[in-house]
Image 1 (spheres, rainbow, N blue to C red):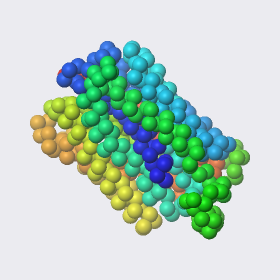
Image 2: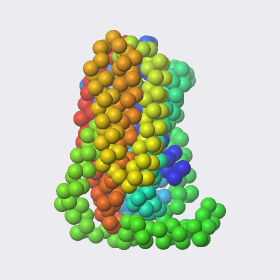
Image 3: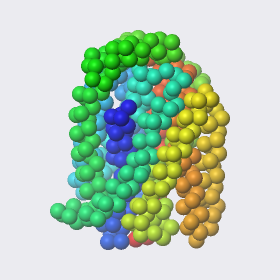
Image 4: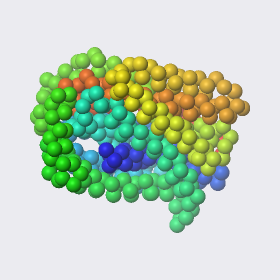
Length: 389
């Protein structure tokens, strides 16, 4: 779990640092928009291009996990997206940025649903929400770390001839490549494949195998059952999960991509807006772990999901309805909305995992929900926010 957590944290940092690049050093007109000559509309197109690549390659990537071991495939994903993230330092024209965002989405596709699928190799269905939440809070922790990271990197503006936004991409891309190389060697594939005893004893390995035989997803090793793949697309329940996830992830990515901009537009300086982006994610981390624990403890998915959704609705209502001059109310609404939205996603996938019986079904359904559901992210990324600085 720790290495997948770190990997997904880097994924979110690499994906969302563009939100800080948009406002970094705005007072000196050194943002990515100003220095590249990019309009807000072109910026939004580039954001949407990421999700196009992500959606197209999501299902194929997850099915490859039936043929290729998780350590090898996750390493491939991380190394390639780390390279693309680093290459964003070289952006000179708006179309360069759009192309690289598309490639970033294509390279990163399959990592999140792949890890959710990978967790079914190790944990029982009734443990799904907590395990997915423990992995998924990398999203909110990345918001905390990414905000602090961006805050420090903005102060490096023009160091060695690079703008602050270029330092953002460079300092997040290179560590990703390094962790990708590490994950290849240290991530175990399945309990059956473990041969080293430095972290798990033979008795613990056998217990892990036996637990999954009682309450786990049945695996057919490398064989892809075409009838099961088709069955996933024909099952109305999976499309209900798509709808649930689409609405939730649309809100999550709207916040992930534009929260610093929203705070900046309330009248705060770019450095202050970056720093203030940390608190909403810290609150979301706490609520995500709490709700996931309650969900698994009570073996309930619907009621916890309703609760987190209502929290998000309250937060967005305060954010939208409060007077524009009341910055405290709007900031409080952002904290509440972020907490409710991000706490909902592990419950959705925990609920989905409870309804999957075989590995082919799991690989396909998890990727289907993640890919098609991310159409909501395309909608979220299409919003233009004009910067006054």
